[in-house]
Length: 95
Image 1: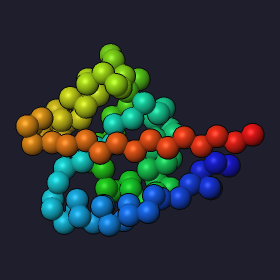
Image 2 (image 1 turned 135 degrees about the vertical axis):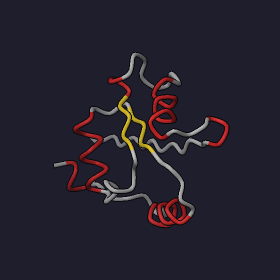
Image 3 (image 1 turned 60 degrees about the vertical axis):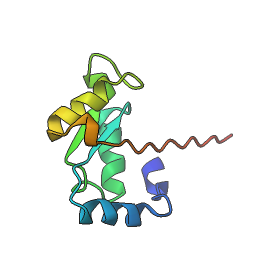
Image 4 (image 1 turned 90 degrees about the vertical axis):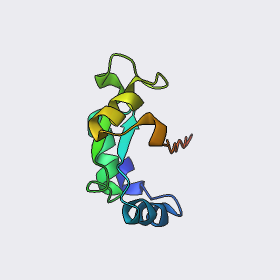
């Protein structure tokens, strides 16, 4: 199963601790199906890290449209003027 091969990126724990220590609100915004997103978040030990998980297909417009990000801000009760997006996208191709 692919989830058994899932490993966190180097530095993830350091970034997570920094975000938590600064009391920042956080949401995962993804176009992955909810079950996949929740599985990955769980396998990485981040279930309690995110305050919300926003799924692109559950919005009228998916990423890269800004709607999922704006929904995350709404759920977090955060301002776009005091927010940043951290994107990670890794593609693995096998034969």
